[in-house]
Picture 1 (tube, one colour):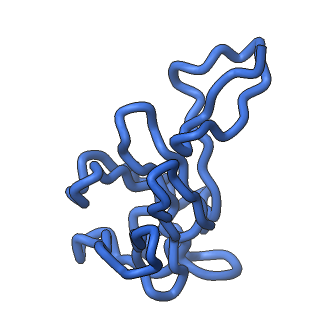
Picture 2 (picture 1 turned 30 degrees about the horizontal axis):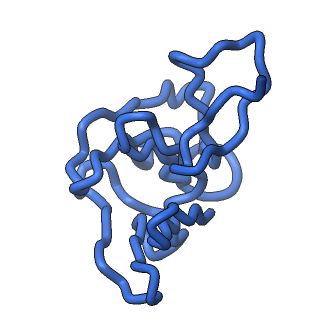
Length: 124
């Protein structure tokens, strides 16, 4: 998944590179966000940018059943790359998550689309 910001910078989850990569408007790599080891980074997939600039993303753990204990699968990083929150799934019914959509703070009576800064904004 990739999101381009008004500045021209682009945030990209890089799958098996186990990271969120940031590139500047010239296409130069400027930052990698991953880890820590205890979350068992495996495949960084879908992400959402929050209003505060944080990234909430999924750490997919592989195809099929039985991967729920493999790693922490929902992670939130601040823009500096520090893990600020995570959700440990119940492995008895969650094997592997690929996408995330944070509804907290959204007006659920309205359609939301990706805004200029990559965060979700309501359509009037």
